[in-house]
Length: 194
Image (cartoon, rainbow, N blue to C red; front, side, top):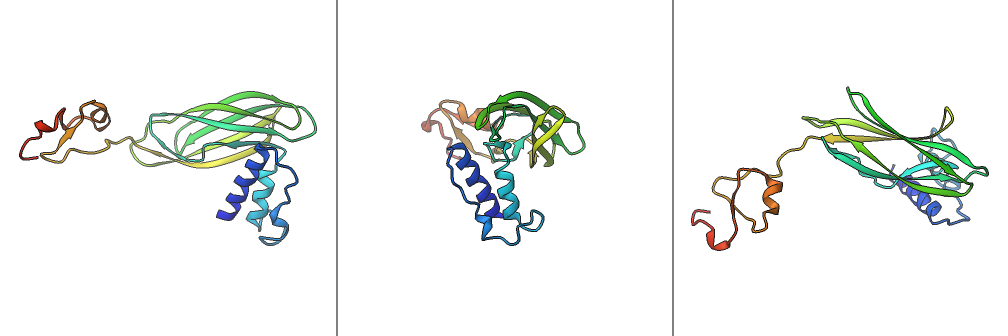
């Protein structure tokens, strides 16, 4: 539900900027105060979890064989120090999971921005994947968020049509498009048939 997602992101931004006095909108909107029947209420609960890890990049589509660098904000809005581990797991349907773990210690009412990188496996067709972000204290998972992702195969950006030429004096575009293009450095070199 779009409204629930908007509320979730707004609340995360309020937490980042340390805005106080937020009254959950769900007290008057969205139906009964039931996490299973009211997605707005559930979104507010998730966004206000005292221990939480919120992703900064929200795109979930990746090219196969690449390395994707991501950032997450880890919050401790509890009343005690938190010795945690931020754990990410990236899994492609039918393949093993890649995982990473970053220890993080936060005093009450603190947050920290962390960076992590995901190695995206090879794929020859569109493939479903998942990215799970977790906070672990000891052996207990205290926060978890799962993002459905898609891995896309790398394909050439364009195939050269017959007779086409590529004006590319700096040779930057040719590197992206690959072989098959007749490259020229000057517009005077455009063949009459192009």
